[in-house]
Length: 463
Image (cartoon, rainbow, N blue to C red; front, side, top):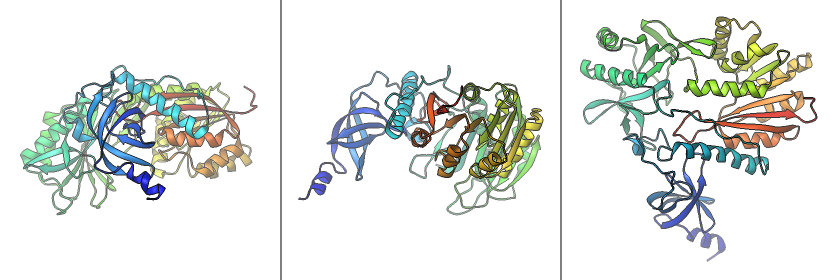
């Protein structure tokens, strides 16, 4: 038997193993080692000794199913959600909230150690929530038929079975109520759910959104067809039973796709948007407008960005990946000029409208690639003092990192939603920059997601 097949034989599918969990993985799973191989065990917590069954073996790691906990972590708690095991929307409800915050900080530290080779990265304690429940302002639940009744919820992880979410604990109660009521009325009126295998039926998704500041609510019904049976009765019933509703919208998505929204949207009743506020800023949110899902933590996040940017009123700030312009507008009162860059034209249109609504005359928004526009402006003598980047989970584009190292703003404020790509990007920026501070923030309690606000300053820059 050669060495590699001996190694393979050391662990096999179906094998029962006992191991100690050392840390949490990026998706909230427990990480342990068996014969020097990494083993991921879902729902296992750091410090626990667990008995698990191997379900998959890869070259560098294995996956195992938790059979039982032999030695419990003091951080283990009973998940309050009745469908927690099936749903998969949250991955850490079985862990005490303070322990969640500590483990999220640990994830960020580990990533900076591993990729940026920083032994003691300057990572602060995670900023959490006083009440980590009912924080999501938007619910997007798929609709289907199960056991003869209409249900609305999320697909069970790795399956095509809908988990009915009448009462989601992380959703704001207003969105739960809208989804519950809309489902009930459609059941009563016999409006059929869309069946993607047979390609029959009407309703695909119920999207409910609440504005935390004003209490206004909006319902968007995503349908597979333009025609909508009994729509007048539906609207009448919704208005009667949900007095807080100010906007009812239909979006048509005929395509066979995992995307929620289609291209055409029409107003069925009420206003086209709901009014929301964030700090001093106000926003009109149409059915498809992007807005952060946890307004309470978003405010804290933007305050951390402002703190890291260290503005005095004389700076030119560039906000790359600016989306609908929320960060740019948050910083505008404290800067000389703010320019946002974004690839998606619709988002830039929204950002311009938001700037106008909030009287931010010193904020402009541009469609394009940051790695093209930033050096072009620098050549014209428009050089940023502070650059804010808020990239998707994949992190910064290599071309953008090169252009940052070339343009050399005094400060880079990096807003990260993925510790791994953050670590890799910081490693490259360390060529010219110093890592000053890292502030983790919990945007989505009871999930493995962690946001960080990172400050990098140019080496040798005058403070």
